[in-house]
Length: 546
Image 1 (cartoon, rainbow, N blue to C red):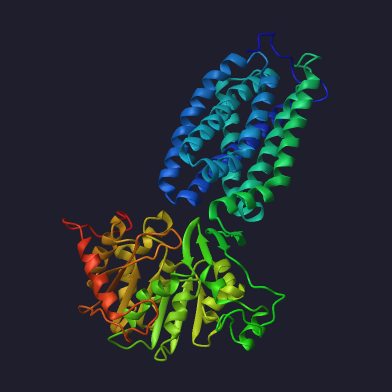
Image 2 (cartoon, one colour):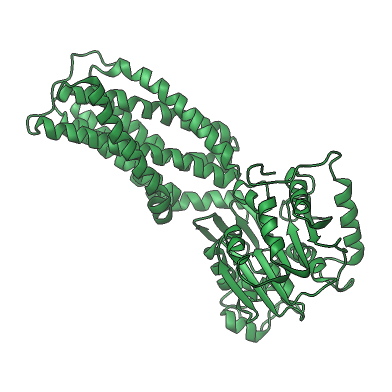
C-alpha cells in the first residue's frame, strides 16, 4: 500500500490543459487495449472449444465482476495515483500480452483450459478495473472540476477507446498479426501508455530513489514482450507438435478458422518413376504436374484439422465421402450437383467419379482452405484435383447467404450435398436449421435429393437437423456409418438423405465401391434407428438452434 503524501501536479513542462488531454489519451489507449484482451480470450476459447456462447458468457461475467473488485482495491492506492497506475499498466501489459500464449499452453500441455481462462480473465479484469479510479484521481490532480464533468470526459475517452479496440481486433490485429503477436503488441502499447503517464507527465511524483526502479520495470516488461514475440513461432510449433502428434506441414489462421495439415509430405528428391511398392506412386504425368511424387501412404496418413478438430483423416475419408455422396446419386437424376462446404475437394472427387455428373457447384466460405486443396501435393492428390475439373464452378461465400441469393435465380439442382462443420459448433448451427433447409429445398429440382452430414447420431444436433428437414416438407432417411477411429474422431458419422418423396437408401454400385456396400448401408440405417430419441425432437431454427 502506498502511504506517502498526495501526488504533485504534473511537471511544469506541460500545461494543465495539455496534461488533461494526455490523461484522457491514456484512458483511450487503456480502454482499447483492455477490449482487445477481452476479445482475445473470447476468440481463443471459441477456436479451441467451439462453443462461442459459453466463452463469451464466461469471459464477460468474470471480467466485469473482477473489474468491480479492481475498482474497490484501487481506492487504497490513490495517494500516489501515477505510480500506482504505472504498476497496474506494467502488470496488465505482461498478463494481457502473454494471455494467449498462457491459455494456449494450458490447453495443450495441462488440459485445464477453463480454469486457466477464469484465472487469467480475473487478473486482467482486476487490473482494468483499477485503471478508471486512478485516472480519475490524476485528472482531478491536474485541475479540479465538477465530478460529473470529469466522469463524463473520462468515460467518453474510455468508450471511444473500446470502440477502436473492438474494431482493430478483427480488422487489423487478427489478420495482420494473429492472436499471439496481436496480444503481445497490445501489451507493449499498454506498457508505453503507463510509462508515459508516470515517467514523463507525472515524473515528479515518485520519490527520487523509486524512479530508476520504475524505468527498469517498464524496460523489463517491454523486454519480456519482445522476447516472447521472438519465441512465439517456436512455441506454436512445439505446441502443435504436442497437440497433433505428427509433423505439421501447414498451419494458417484464416479469418474463419485455424487450418492445420499434418502427416508426411512428398519427397522432392525422389523421382516419380521410382517405386518402393507396386502402385505406391501416382502416375508420372500427374507427379510431374504436381512437381513432387506423392506416395499413396502419404495420402493415407494425411490429417486436416479445422479449428482444432479433425476434418479429414486420409485413411478414413474414402468411407466417409462414399457414405455421404453415393446414396444421394442413386435413384434419380444427378446431372447438376451443388456442394455446400467441402472446401477440401474430397466430396467433389467422389461426385465426379460418376460420369452422370455434368455440372457441379462448390460453395465454400474459406478461400485459404480452397487454396490449400488446390496446391498441397498430398491433399490435391487425395481429392483427385477435383477443383480444377472443367465441370466444377467454385464460389467463395457463406453457404446460408449464397442460398438466400440463389433462390432468386433460376438454377435448380438434382442433388445437394451439405458437407458442413458439425452442428455442435456455434458458427455452424445456422446451417442445420429449418430456415437453411427451407432455402435448400427451394433449389431442389423435381426428384432432387439433399444429403446432409449432421454429426453423430448420439448428439442432439443430429436429430434437431432431421426434424428441421421434416419441418420444411422433406422426407428423410437416417443412417450412421461407424467411423474407423484411426484419427480419434467420433464413433460414427451420422447422415440424412432427404427428398420431397420418401427417399430410398441405395448405392449405384456394389461391393466394389470404396469403403461402402449395400449391406453396410443397411446396417447404417439400423444403427441410426437404434439411436433415435424416445421423444420427438423440436426442429432447429435460427432462434432455437439444436
